[in-house]
Image 1: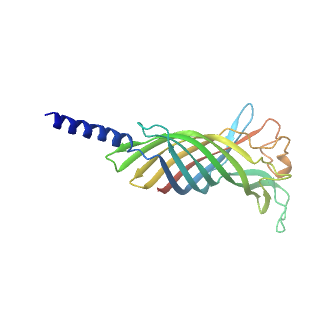
Image 2: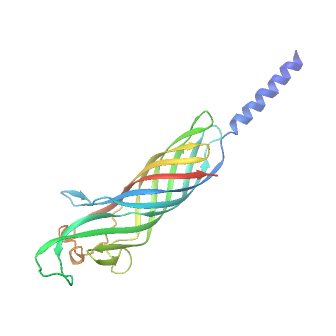
Length: 232
């Protein structure tokens, strides 16, 4: 009897150790997908959003286990993300084919590109060891590495000397991931919190006639993303 009790105790202890070690300590992943991005400009009295612009993203993620007992992870990585927005502005057509200088409307497209570093926390709800639901939330910091502002047929740089926008971007990210075995599918939303318009930048000199003077104006960058990827 004592022999069976000893064997049972060993099995229980072994099972407890194995159950505590079932959560992966480190999960590397790659992601790609589509962004639907927009910019919002606001003053003390009102705000208005640019029309959405479709872009893309590519990212590498790293999830690190925080608890041996629970599938609670901190997630970071590096993302390349194409963002921006579109708007129609009041202006004049001074092109070669123009026969008039009457005021009209021009299409303006802002196409910034960022490198982003997220800092997120997520929890893995495991369903029958094959399917996992992973809600997540946190923040991200982005650095503008390129991009253009297109006003009519003219293009100018988004960032750099004499440009309208600063390179830094910061915001809140929330979403949910779905993992079947190793295949990842995710939905997420970014809410920009940092005013990316340079202080003292003159918007009216760049053709943004219907926005007005840049004094008191704030511009933020947000997006909704759909991702697909693979966890190693």
